[in-house]
Length: 173
Image (cartoon, rainbow, N blue to C red; front, side, top):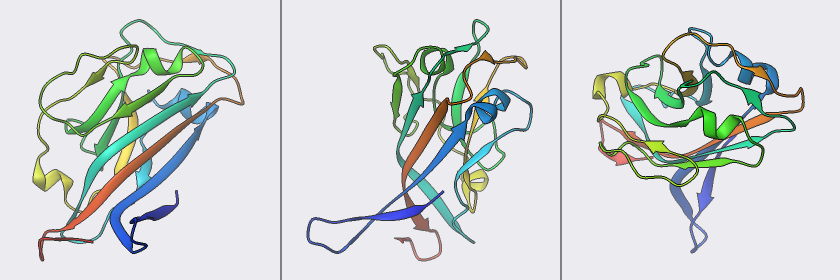
């Protein structure tokens, strides 16, 4: 999970950071287990909040997974606050067929009309649940399901572009 800063066209540092995590086949299969979350961005520190600019998920599948119908979503959340989704995408669309990706934006309060991959945006975040919290990805399912199939060489890459806002100074870092 490397953190980097994009360079601005003028050569100076930009305030947009990025972090990436690559999940293995074994990790993908445990995503529906209760309490299993994978950290993508570390907590920013006291009185700071991570603001998502975008999330990009890419499934590199040799063989797709068998997911029960209505499996749910791959969801990015703050810390352990599972009710405060930052953004999410349909797991069935991303993990059953090779060569799929999802480009997700932060929640805006209304569902989008998607082609191929449905993107759903939900409620505004609770500030208290977002301060000094890491960004994590997990599988949000209506019931505990087991994902089967796949291939040992399968991966799911999750990249987050984000800003860090210092709530004390009101400045981005």
